[in-house]
Image (cartoon, rainbow, N blue to C red; front, side, top):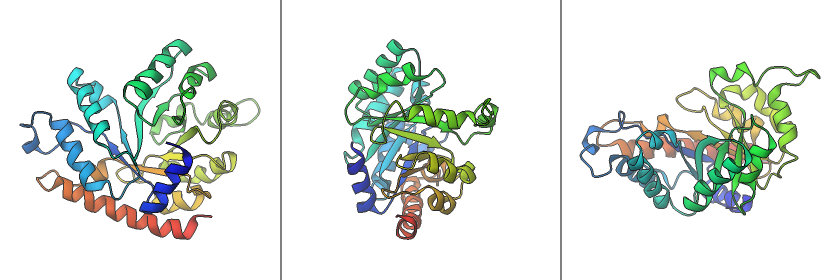
Length: 272
């Protein structure tokens, strides 16, 4: 998917919502456990209920990998069920030496046909470049994440007074353009999103941490939006686990619509 196609979906749906499919067998409604594939059945109903209100889906691959071959099968079925107009993110956080990264890229871009993959930049340029060799596919680089441990390394200062996450931003913009690279910027660091936007004015940001983690959607939208919106705001638990009963899909749909309506307001207010 190209950046223009993604922006067109944002305009059409008046939404920049990404629904995280962090599907946990221990949390899905009990009545689904007798299904042939409970994970896929849950995802299928969540997708049906939310597809009109979001522009992207982000399965975190750990929830599927942990189940072995059955989990991978559930992931593939889920990916194939997602409407083609929706942007798909493999939240796999890969990143390894070049030849290994090349195989990870083949797995997620050729075998599974995701639009994008999250990549950890710690090993440097040669660990990221192989993911950039695919047309209309995206690297979403971890820059400033929403977890508490992000302070351990990302906020360390270098000898010239910059934070490590800023060095990642500077270096990575030499590897790819804003048409092929996005950045993960946590919503719980909304105070820094504006500064990061100043360093990467044209890039899309994938913003986790809104919803269950307490990020402020309006604050993120105000400081993070650019001329093509430039934001994919992820919500996982607050939407997919809005109810643990038989009405789980309807509850997810209501929650997604509520977020979409709020986003519609901010698109009108902050898109420039």
